[in-house]
Length: 286
Image 1 (tube, rainbow, N blue to C red):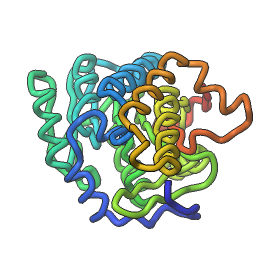
Image 2: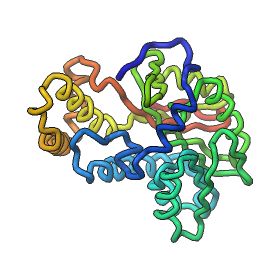
Image 3: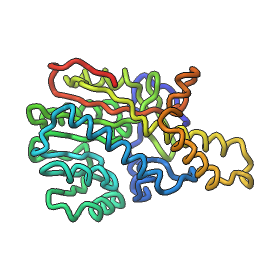
C-alpha cells in the first residue's frame, strides 16, 4: 500500500475515485479488491458468505426491526442489497458507478421489495426513515468533512431503535491515505470512533472482520511475491490458488498467528461498526 500518515483525511480527489469505479469490473472480486492475486472466483463468494454471518448476528443482537426499510449506500454489484431484500420489508440501494449499478439491477430486479437508485451517495436524500442504513466500505472513499456531513444527515433518517452499520477497511494507527489511480483513506478504529462521536453517534459494537483479515493476508502475501519474484517465474494463478486454499484450510486459527507472534500483518484490517443515534448503550468490542 502506497500512502502516508495524515492528521486528517481531506486529500482524496473525487474525480479520480469516480473514474476508478466507473471502470470497475462488475464482479464480487472487483469491489472486494481481490483481482490480480490468482485467487479462484469462489474466493469472493466465500468472503461474502462469511461476512454475512457476522452481519446477521449484529442485526440480531441489535434487535433491528426487519419490517422496516434498509438503505444500502454504495451498494456495488448488489450482493448486500440482495441479502437485505431477503430479510427486510423494503430495500433502497444507491450506487453511482454505471457498471456496478447495472450489475446490481440484474442481480436484484426479481425482488419486489427492492428499489435501485443510480445516484451519488452524498447528494441522495432518503424519502423515508430506515431501520438499517448499511455502508459497506463507503467511508474510506470520502474525505473527513464529507464523512461527518453524511453521517449527520443519515442520523436524522433513522427510525427509533434504528442503526447505521459500517464495514470499513482500517489500519492500526492514525490515518493512511492512498493516492494514485486507486485512492482511499484507511483510518484506525480510534479515528473512526472519534468521527462517529463528533456526529453525535454512539458505537454500540465494534467487530473485527475476520474473513477480510484472512483474505487480506493472501493479498499481501501475493503482492510481496510479485515484488520479489521475476515475472516469468511468478505463476500467479498457481501461487494464488495455493495461498487461498492454504488460508481456507487453516481458517480460523491462521488469522490469529500474526497477533500471537507479535507482528502487524496484514497491513490492512477491517471492522464492522454498529452505530446508534443515542448514547443509551455502552460500546462493546467483539
